[in-house]
Amino acid sequence: MILLTGASGFIGQNIKASLQKKTEVITCDLNGGDIYPTDLFPYLKKQMIDIEGIIHLGAITSTREKDL
Image 1 (cartoon, rainbow, N blue to C red):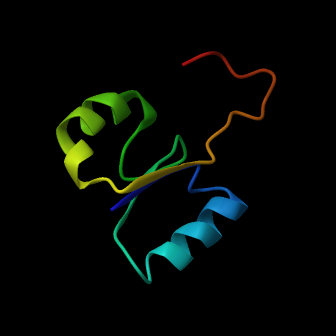
Image 2: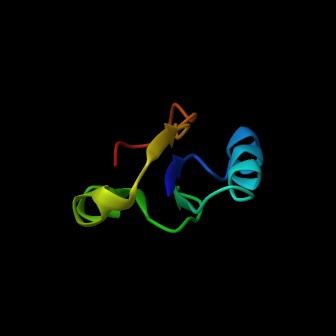
């Protein structure tokens, strides 16, 4: 299982599509994903044994966005 952040972006969508052909992919994104960012750490504590890798592409590109 791979954890992918930023999966709703252009690059994230393409990486997700490619990885899903080979392994299970769990996504974390503000714009919709399997896990909402504020729930990420509790999820990791529970599932860390099953996660083979993390690909971090998530970012807030707006300069007007408030900290989460």
